[in-house]
Length: 430
Image 1 (cartoon, one colour):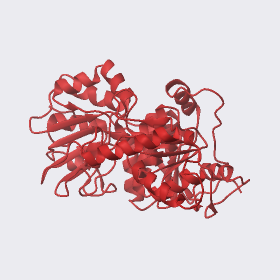
Image 2 (tube, rainbow, N blue to C red; image 1 turned 90 degrees about the vertical axis):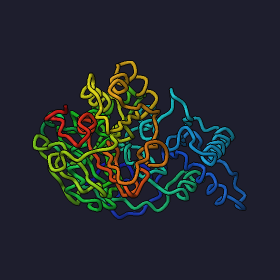
Image 3 (spheres, one colour; image 1 turned 90 degrees about the horizontal axis):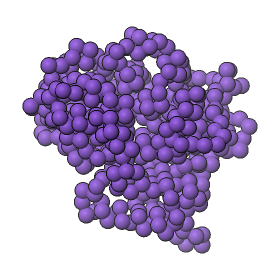
Image 4 (spheres, one colour; image 1 turned 135 degrees about the vertical axis):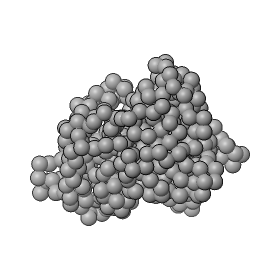
């Protein structure tokens, strides 16, 4: 019996010739990622090793990555103190894959890992963040775990009691229409599957639409796979993956892609015709409450947010900048832009995208997760409505349970910022 991509990866990481869905394994971890919650992981790490006689040092510092991104720069003394605690641990243990609060090498963890070449096809990646699923865009098996689980990974170098997930195959064929992108595709899938439709499953993406899609778009798909309940999303590595790793991530040396067997077993196959898709919006307060933009067009918005680990890459910013260039954001609407990394910020600055945003009336912020998480920058007032390119719209997600959050693509967000209301980018704004 053939194996899916994830089954092959887990078999290799567990030293087995084959595995199947339902098997329980302890696979070797290739990369363990945390952000500010590394402060909690550190406490758990020392706790589980206390009294064992074992040295309280991570199993392999070169396989640990820590990125400050959720609360940067620190918004409180508590956060600043936790940052200090993590910096001290990093220095004491020789962790080199550490990205502090910097404008040049900093950014959101799910952008930093791929752009720095930390993720390779066939790897097992764990992270103390649910959107660790993003890294399946490069053909890795990447999934989120808790702080205590991460502490055990730091101690042992393996993930404990991992059940091999079954896989849903998604085949996307055809060309995406104008102003329809990867965000619309993943919203369409979440709407079809529902928020729990892929629970304990992996979503494996295939089809000519995916093969033509740049890695930036694949990151969007895998990032939001978790919003359908998936353990991970994954795009089998191909020529585009190799191009990205070589040209953009600076990876040299042999890279081995992992492909599914022709007779791999899938629990379901979903087919999508790309040409039939349209701009979509996820309405409050669930990501699977997906509607065509036309169904909510005209809804007034107090704040538009463009950026995040979902849609803060250079091509996302290019799409939005092209729409707003030479125009002005509606006077009753605030527009916030936060690139996914310092590198993207610098490139967007050079290409004039940031100037287009600022001249239109937007506020451009540092790379970080604050507005999306709702803990730092861009909180909403009572009764306010936000339209965002981020990945979650749960009640209170952007800092206020008495507000409403709609999710959309960069094209919809930019057009809506100009109009001051949810707008179909195919019809334009004032």
